[in-house]
Image (cartoon, rainbow, N blue to C red):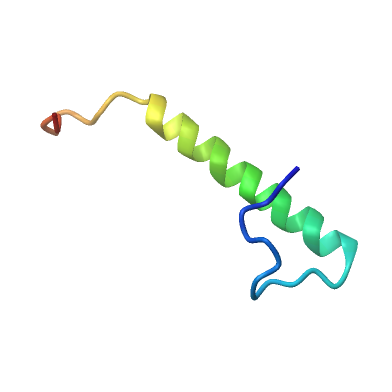
Length: 48
């Protein structure tokens, strides 16, 4: 899995660091997808 932060200030020194970062990015991506599927709250005007 390719991560977004490609060795910038978060240089992986141990394999578990890379795994933890990839897992957190996967969770964040999943949350973003879930939130995009939810209907907008009532009273919120659609931006078109």
